[in-house]
Picture 1 (tube, rainbow, N blue to C red):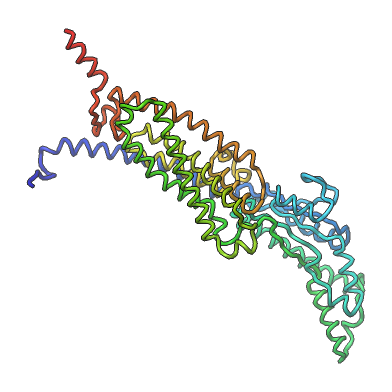
Picture 2: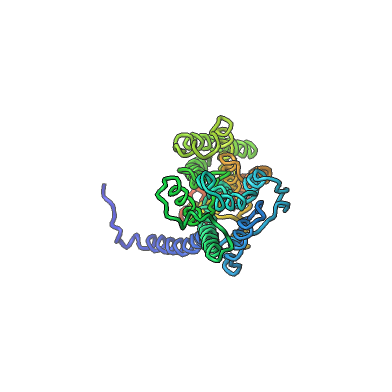
Length: 467
């Protein structure tokens, strides 16, 4: 088959027209892509800008030497001017933080429901240490420094923040506090303010005496320590990225069918009632997102790894269906939102509409709104943000905000479904008037082609016919 060369003078006007068009698209794309990328990277970069708003609680049940020394050491490490690290806050046994701390279990439950971390200094910490130092034998041998304190953390509150901000801060600060206490105790022993048995300075070949001598030396070297308990674990295997990839992959797999629906329904707009077009679009979107939700829940079941069963909540049938429903409604909210763009915008900016919609939602799963600058507080309303909170609660039991999360997502589905009603009406009106073609190009575009005559041409033809 013969043809003409691209260098032919006959094609120059067309090439010039197309070239100017693509230059315009490139310029528009640079600005349109820059905006969501700035939101994404800016939000992720600024996610710890207000980390000082995180309060790490100290609950002193001891009221003795250990409790006062550790509390004072941790409070001295606070740096209010440094906004990139959390601050310690002392709470007494009778303090009210969402409920009275009458026991260690009440602190544990508060951390699961509301907090990031809380250090409990047990009521007998000082007494056990003094007893181990003052007596020989089994008292020193049975003493465990880890029994002095317990650090309750909740990685399910937000695993990224927990891994990058909370855990490094608690590990470093508690390491300094316990070391400072050990140094101060040695100084007190040297000054004679703390008495220990003479066994440490006595030379003896007796095996029991040597063992006791070693035990007491170990206590002096490390008099107190702590054990850490994650009350809502979410740092298992794929945990920190599971909800992000469940939503993101499901959303990316939904874009293809939505574009196909847009490109293949031109005839329907000519013949089918507006109400039926809207119902069909909503039903198909729900069916597809439910399918994606099922695949997401099954994928988590298959790849959650052995670490999940060791640390997280038991994965039951109920949690499987809860996860399925969470992924479904989250994807449905974003899909209806995005489909409203797809129905109206021309093909040249379909990708940009996807970026503007999906990138902010993706960013919201990596950011805690309470710790970000005020500009980013709008992420409270994003489906991915609320879906991620539901996802983490289902699997870890942390920070339950079920009513708010479900309400926001369902509210957005309703609002965007009503918006889709209007958008489909506009699209059908444009198709019937000959101002929009099958691909979505508008009348006047160099790519526009529609078998439906433009309404002005219809009017002109009718006037010519009457005359």
